Length: 163
Image (cartoon, rainbow, N blue to C red; front, side, top):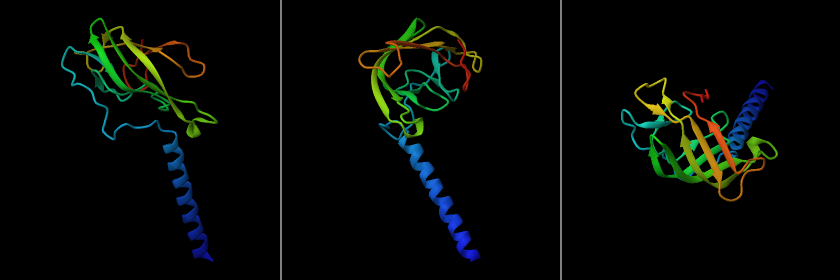
């Protein structure tokens, strides 16, 4: 009897872990490649875009907007300008519809024009200036409840928006 109870507990635990892993995977946006986000190396004095993990980015190809849950991400970014006066580019905002709830939701692509603006000294690395605001302009369809132009303060470090 004791072996049957232990075997059942192991089986149920394995099933729960497998289900949790499948649920998380279904809520992930499509991945173009398995490689890390491509970004140009930042040199001293460059204007940078600080990501969720306090990494400095120059002209990244991907960028997570929703650090807490990953339900909004920019992918396929192509930059036409990057400098002290701001940065401009295009890409796709992949947004989870969270229907019926976020873990079971589906990601949908929305083409956008991206603008980075503002500047301040980066507290973590004072030799770099960082952008302080990101604006998205949806060029076609947009997620439910979003305006055509959405603007977000950018963070100075992990999960700490600073504008």
